[in-house]
Length: 85
Image (tube, rainbow, N blue to C red; front, top):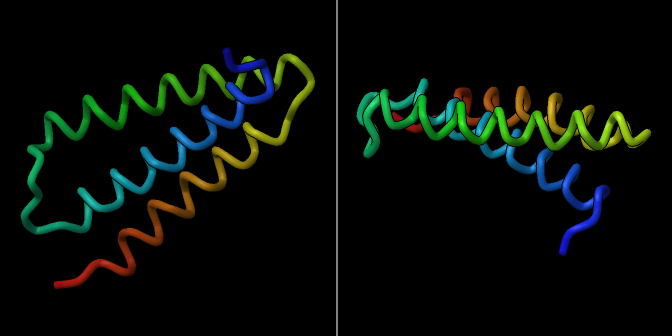
């Protein structure tokens, strides 16, 4: 079973993946997933990731929350600005 610290870092990873997925969807002219499915997947991952990182933050571990939030923005920007036409 994962401990509190590992769950926080799992939440950070989910936030980063959700940011990257949303960036790919925003930058794509055609996507294999429809907008509705992408919203469900990214919002689900974001909510779960945010809940896990906040729980770790309340347990006095601020690394996962900061990493997840900044990483999600960075991953979304990376996906948008490196998109191929």
